[in-house]
Length: 264
Ligand code: BT5
Image 1 (cartoon, rainbow, N blue to C red):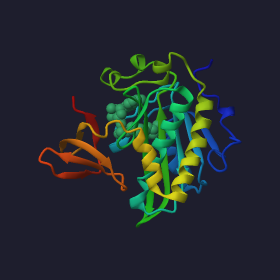
Image 2: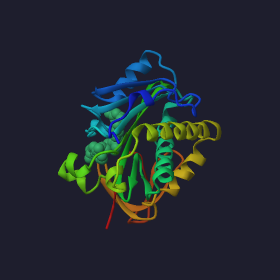
Image 3: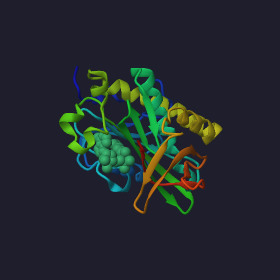
Image 4: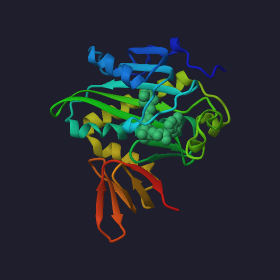
């Protein structure tokens, strides 16, 4: 089986109404998120997707490098939610739910969500999600949600040493390669369904599903961000997407930005 994506199989997903009706593909781009932002500025409709085989400047939050070799699934989808900017960050959880459900159902692997934007398989990061938005005052013009899934490569061969213990790929977990186009189509279908649930019923039902996968809840964690490192019991993720910690002195603290690691 070819480990690469077959571009002709990405077009026209018959099972979605809006997502993936227009799919742009390139072998190599700097970042599909940057590309999708350009497309959105030119007026691309909701559900338009930019996919690439490799990214030369894939990035995560705070412009951190996202390593994107051949064999991964790297794509970004344009959304135009009728939401206020302060709410649009909830889309990270919408995407997280869609990815987690597809990976669990398709591959029967142990999937977890980790606050705020990771999906793990067997405790290691297999997917990163990056939500970026363009706003005018409080109004959202468009949101670009980038999804990176480590699929058909061996992380021990392509990721730097420091990531090998914390990252994994579907190939590493399943012991085989998968069809990227099939995974792509399944993700678009589930993304559309979860996004529609969010649009119609709001954030609560989406967050409830996300929390079912959030095994870090109830455990002692350390959250680090640019300003501080905080240790506490991970109590909850609230309806604004903030992580609620119980600190050692018993006080509750809401955290909006950071990286979580389990304390052992
Ligand atoms: C993320 O950021 O996890 C979001 C990654 C989003 C990537 C997609 S790919 C398609 C689209 N185009 C883009 O340019 N981006 C999106 P963050 O939580 O900030 O995590 C970044 C950190 O993950 C890095 O600092 C590394 O430690 C680690 N990392 C980098 N590459 C990785 C990989 N392939 N697998 C697992 N971890 C990785």
